[in-house]
Amino acid sequence: MAKFFSMKKYPGVTYYESSERRFNGKPDRCYYIRYVDPSGKRIREKIGWESEGITAKYAFEIRNERLRNIRLGEEVIPIQKKKKQKITFDEFMSEKYLPYSKDNKNSSSYQREYQLYNAWIKPIIGEKTLKDISPFDLEKVKKEMKEEGKAPRTIEYALAVVRQAFNMAINWGIYSGINPATKVKKPKEDNKRIRFLSPEEAGNLLEELKKHSKQTYEMAYLSLYTGMRAGEIFNLKWEDIDFDNGIIYIKNSKNKTDRVAYMTDGVKEMLLDKKRDLKEESGLVFKSSKGEKITKISHSFFRAVNALGLNDNVVDRKDRVVFHTLRHTFASWLAIKGTPIYTIKELMGHKTLAMTERYSHLIPDIKRKAVEDLENVSRDLNSKTEDKIKSNKSS
Image (tube, rainbow, N blue to C red):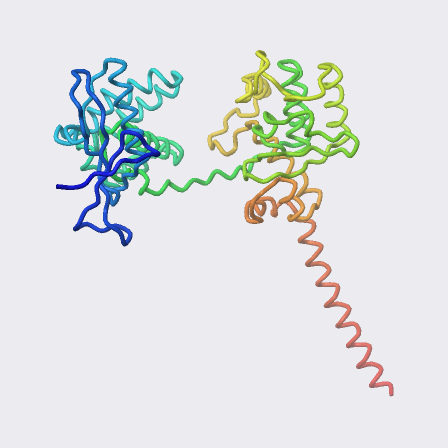
């Protein structure tokens, strides 16, 4: 009979070591959990082997889930019994995942997941059991959507739904194994924006924003003249602004590195005016109407864009004017002014120079001047050579 060992760190979790199976050079461990069911019966439930990816912590989480279900009066079905039931993906989605999504996510997210599942995922893997779904099946979903002209972002969203569903099945103890969605590569997406605003367009947009929302105008102005991302503006605090030296300290940026932005006179004046109006010395610079951190750009920005017709007849989404266009405009204007590409990289907070090179085509005068200088060097050399030949002949 196998000898079971208790886990002090994880109460209710036990394991035994196999005399035949090996994993990572040691005896493979099989984890179990113990609890008492509603009838008072003591249960010892097998969770799985360490070589199958099961850990003591995971087993402990399953036990807590069992105890929660018992406390709420919900049915508790052991993992091994669930495996025998051979639940199909459609059954899991219809009975578990989508109801959970509807209750715990916002309405638009739930509707999006529901539509993607029924249109693209269900027809291909709906009738398959969870354990029978492979990465190859999900490649079929990806291929089908691509052939129907769906955008890479839409395909990625559909794969994310599958990935989240399997993660939930694992957490709830309904599925034990590798999440097949983690083995599928995301579709490549060319999301490099090429659209930037002319000075006239930018001026008109800022003026229009003033009519709709002063705070949205201020955020747009800040992005346009510092290159800050929306998320960086949402996180900006008064203590991050050094008015004496005209510097904004950007912390916890998208690339997980801190950097600084330099204030123009206009940015500095705008922020000082805002600070005087609010009479605040610390905390978030921009807040929601409830005094909380902002999480998304106000619809007033898009109302202003639409009022100016900046997106009229635009087909390619990369050409649409969105809030991020302001940051892109900041970098584009720098490039047009002849700013060295490495300086633009540092000001933008790009991780690699390759991310900044999309702006290099906007520096035509610098490239032309370099070629002209090369031609001048060649002309000078030829002139000196001719003078030397004439000198030799005269002597």
